[in-house]
Image (tube, rainbow, N blue to C red; front, side, top):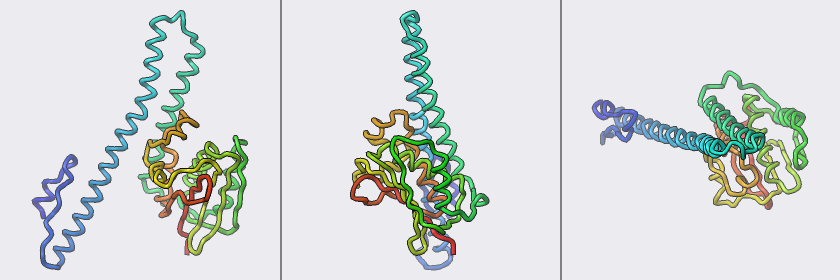
Length: 260
């Protein structure tokens, strides 16, 4: 077991320790060690994939901006520089949005339990709705009282903000945000009456930088990190975020344990 552990490096995490045949303390130790190594290997692979995706996400707008500048400098007198500046500003804004989302994901990896406090979900939703400027479609609220969860209010507000932005982009006539309790679970649901998401694509939208064609058409400057960040926030609170059947449109449902 010691020899196998000594062979493990950051670039080679495939080693596993031998599991003794006898059911004793050493077998239990070897099983736990191998399980830990599997989790570590999976985490490293996720980080490497995320680094690659983030690099690609930042490189695309930078490459586009550089090509436009190089073309413009070949014949500067024929270029409408104010329009060029507006286009480049759009690329810079997208890069800034990606960088901010990456920082948010990095913060989620830190221990933020000290910021957790007893929070009224309905009041949190009311505060967020009061802050928002009127959007493309109206937002209806169905908020049950006395649904308290233990959470980081800033992260939970970020989650709600992202869900509402996503719903407004895809809604046909309106968005509904609801808060309720189901047994020992607090539920926050954001529903839009848009085209909906096919069942086979409902997990894809939670992958980092993944974007469906409809999403690209409605929001070309999107980062593909909004919903993945929401799911990470849910997991940081021992909760789940899923897309559930709603008949029509899309229903994003956050479920969190209620404190005893």
